[in-house]
Length: 119
Image (cartoon, rainbow, N blue to C red):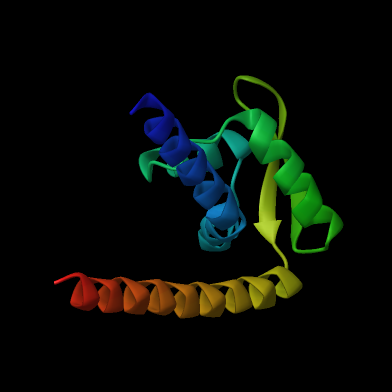
């Protein structure tokens, strides 16, 4: 039973990683965001992410010209890097959302077909 639970947890982690880019871009598209704010929003949605996962993703998205950042003064320390989505990033996000809708529909269809056959 423990082996099955471990396999389920690993699969859940892979599924979360698969949608992380979509979620991060969606958060930043709403308003510019500081990485800690992004992590907190992801945690609220039960998409637990640590800085070691988020920062490489943000850098990859920035290098792909999907995000940009600006430095803003902080009241409690050094300046902070805030991320904004670029026009290209908005187009990319739109494509990801379309893909998500297609995947969601396909998964739901397969679930419905599976339920019909097992009854």
